[in-house]
Length: 135
Image 1 (cartoon, rainbow, N blue to C red):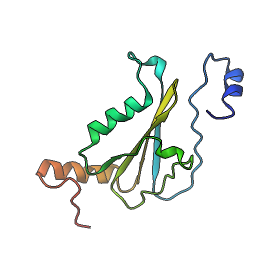
Image 2 (image 1 turned 135 degrees about the vertical axis):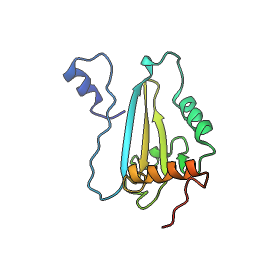
Image 3 (image 1 turned 45 degrees about the vertical axis):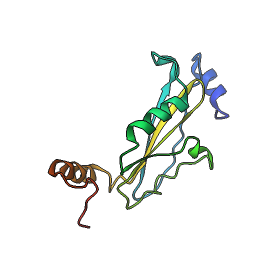
Image 4 (image 1 turned 180 degrees about the vertical axis):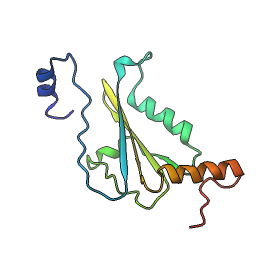
C-alpha cells in the first residue's frame, strides 16, 4: 500500500491500483525477482496466506528452497538482494493484500544461476545429493 499508488492510478487512468515494486540495487552477487499478481485474474478467490501455504506444502521437503515465514518481509519493509551471497539456497517470500500479491524469490545469481542449477540437475540425474559440491 505505497503512498504513491493513488497518483499512479490517477495519472494512468486505470480503475485499480497497480502492483508497484520499486527496486534500487548496486551489488555484486544477489538477485531478487518479483512476480506481481492481481487476485481478480485468478479463477478461484484465494487469500495471500492460502497461496503461501500452497508453496510451503509443495517445497517443504526441499533442502535448497526456503519458504520464508508469512509476513517475514514486512519486519523491516525491505528484502536485501545480496543476503544469500555465496549460497546455493533460494528463498521465496509470498506477501500482499486483499487485491494483489507478490511472489518474490531471493538468491545468489552467481551461485544459484545457470551454473549452480546445472550442477544441481546433474547431481539429481546421477542420484547423489542435489546440493553436493566439491568446493
